[in-house]
Length: 146
Image (cartoon, rainbow, N blue to C red):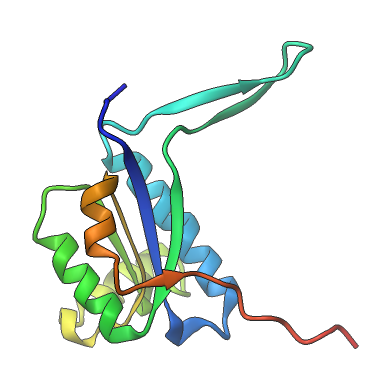
């Protein structure tokens, strides 16, 4: 395992705060993407006293942050400039199924693709510098059920 403290950051655009299902879908897809891309992603298997396995969970922290669209865009530009594994979930990926989403994304320029969330995995100190202007994510309270 690497001796440099690592972490994964997923930053959600506040533009989608009123759509928690969209945000959680983006988090799931981005976590899968980082798991696929990160060569140094350390995991540990959690076992119970009776020998059962609860599966392997990431060793390093995964931190959810949020910010207004311009801050998320700036974070994505900074992430793109480095060598750390990263992924971006944009509005065209919200619905329609993978084939339609890929086609819709390919039909637009990057400037026309509103970012829902981005993820990056790398040295914690480096990511801390990149994410200073973002806040810890807090879910928007839902109205009580009628």
